[in-house]
Length: 155
Image (cartoon, rainbow, N blue to C red):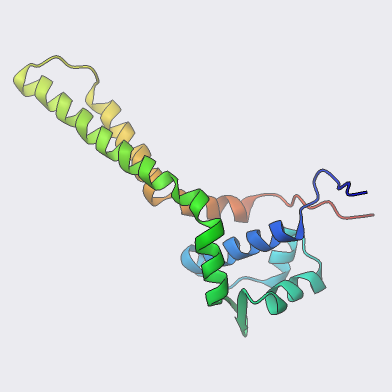
């Protein structure tokens, strides 16, 4: 009775994706979101998209611009962003670890203490930490706008 198709998304999942996509576009995209593009990416019908934008209370539309309301921002902070911000401490740890590895390399090079890692491994660890800390949300946005439509239309 409650059987669903494997690729079918729940309405709430689409709404969460819509909230995240609007937030990321307003923060990193700089372009106005076209409703036809949103329908294609998230699998909404025309009426469903307008209903989600106008009746959910999470969005406000002014002309072609779509913004999150305070309710939408609160939902984003409490329920959506925590799964991405968990990577920030990992990025910080990698940056600190890379600095320690650079210090270890310096001690080997100039004070001739035993060395475990080369300097380029420290640079790679620091770069990984910076990518996690600074560019993760930009990467999520890029993936969201370039992914193929996963919605299976009912025939």
